[in-house]
Amino acid sequence: MQEVINFLNSVIWSPALIYLCLGVGVFFSIKTRFMQVRHFGEMWRLLMSGESSDKGISSFQALAVSLSGRVGAGNIAGVAAAIGFGGPGAIFWMWMVAFLGASTAYVESTLGQIYKEEHEGNYRGGPAYYIEKAMGQKWYAWLFAIATILATGVLLPMVQSNTIGSAIEQAFGATASVDTALGVISYAKIYTATFIVLLLGFIIFGGVKRIANFAQVVVPFMALAYIIIAMVIIGLNIDRLPDIFMMIINDAFTPMAGVGAAIGWGVKRGVYSNEAGQGTGPHAAAAAEVAHPVQQGMVQAFSVYIDTLFVCSATAFMILITGMYNVHPEGQAILVQNLGVDTAINSPVFTQMAVESVFAGFGKPFIAVALFFFAFTTLLAYYFIAESNIYYIKRTLKIPGAIFALKVVIMAATFYGTVKAADIAWGLGDIGVGIMAWLNIIGILIIFFMAKPTLKALKDYERQQKEGVENYTFNPLKLGIKNATFWEKRWEDNLKNKD
Image (cartoon, rainbow, N blue to C red; front, side, top):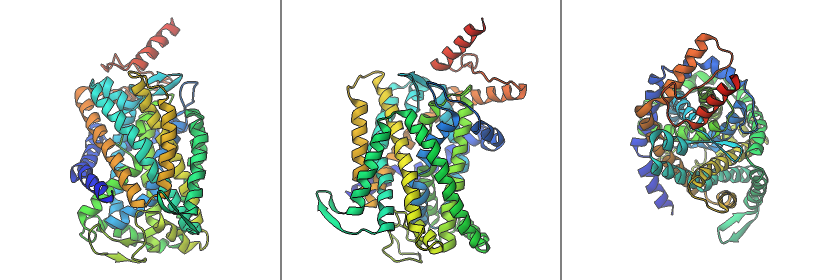
């Protein structure tokens, strides 16, 4: 099975997808005149403002939900894998993906807002919706929806839960094991899997509001605690920081770990972590209550910065400053060995050992707890995304019990992922991310060349900014944006209320 997974990943994550992710970021950065830099102040202002409604969640809640999807196993175990397989230079390419990807995140999330719909009292949207409405290709929208349900309902949850299980086992020991139909499993993983599944079931059966309320409390708290620990470790070794920074820059363009490996793993883990272009962020963006679609696009662009430039960088500096890593490119000899040769790369071990080296007896349990919250909230985000795509399909094809079936399937996948080997779980997760990225990036490029809705919306927002309006409005028909039915109705309702 591992050989099949590796083959599929070699096809899906070929250099074509690596450079497509970077290229589309460059393209949208140029087209939006680097909005991720020009509107940094506005991003921060919007993050602190906004209110929820009976039908939609606030901008901050939407950010928290999308961050709960972005900030997860990729920030702790994914960064470790990028360094382990691609060398320290891979971190530079993760930064590049974040900086350029912020513009991609703006585009896809603004599209999610423009073409959102209202379903059963909640806002729903995402790539499937904007592919159908803006591109006019329903078959392609269905293809994305099905791929996303499979990826976020089955494949990606296994990565998050597997990372939790590995961290718990590393922190508290494998203890005794039992022989099962799934292989020999430690009791630590069985207990962990059972607890995760029970808690996951309690929250997802409570609906999107419960997911948003849980995420907005947990994500900022754990991210702050994680950053503080990282800053302490960096502060205690501040004299080494300039050398570490230069090592990252130099290794990004030298053959120490192979330039191709550094770029490939940096981009792959960068996209996995911040999800820019993957098509997951627009689902949370569409659920937000905002006065203008561009506002949520900007908030989502800012979330990429938080994810990669803050959380991922914190992990990378901890690992590199403490020297708790190996560099072992796939199929090659070990280039750097600071730890045992059998130390798992596709796991949070590097990060746990980095914190443990400074805070003896505290590091491993702390990372295990942090990973639990990061990865668990990502599981909730995955459920929300899969549910949104099932609602999309239900617009055309009524499938009795589809939402209930999704809840059962994601809980089963979560349990299975917790107890299985890390390489299998991460390999399946990479397949899910890659398929979604291919479909979504091609879709947003075609939509841009067809109608440029996100560019028109940005210019409209900037015009209102210059005019100093207090209450932003959005009239898609005036801008030449078609099939934005939600916003068309809102504009008509506003006109009626004025009359």
